[in-house]
Amino acid sequence: MNRREALSSVALLLGGTIVGAEVFLTGCGPADKKYGANLSFTPDDVAYLDDIAETIIPATSTPGAKDAKVGQFMTVIVNDCYEDKDQKIFLDGMQKLNDGAKTKYSKNFVDLAPNDKHDFLVGLDKEAKDYMAKKKPDEPAHYFRMMKELTLWGYFTSEPGATQALRYVAVPGKYEGCIPYKKGDKAWAT
Image (cartoon, rainbow, N blue to C red; front, side):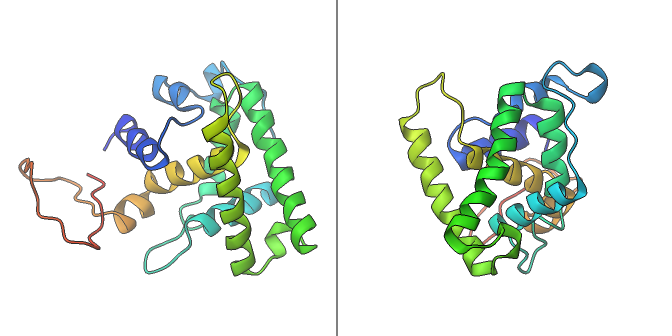
């Protein structure tokens, strides 16, 4: 699976496009940076983003988002591929998410019990979906949608996500256009 196919799959899961994907597809990197400021994420920021991602994709019989280092992935994409306005939305969103947890539970997000983290993010996801359904094309994306997109993108394009959460064959044999699918089977990464 190449980058374009992976992005398309994640976009289909989310029902739209991914912020920053066009820059990623054309090739971006710190050396030829065209977008955004040079942000400095701390190890605590990465751990916080890992915690958010792990709540979205927790470890089960397969590795979770934290195992795939999705927090680090998010910082790279936001820093290297997001425009200034999208970086600001993402960074402000990190603060808003934590402030929302403090308001609702009187604790930082990382200090919440797993079920409280889950319930809180489910509420944010509903808020983001409602916002995205009503927003005009020139309005920015919701910060939680950005976090969720990056979580899915980072996880399913990582080695643990592609090889353990999805069915993966490094060198597939012949092309078979129709393969029987049973409910509960993993999707294919290749």
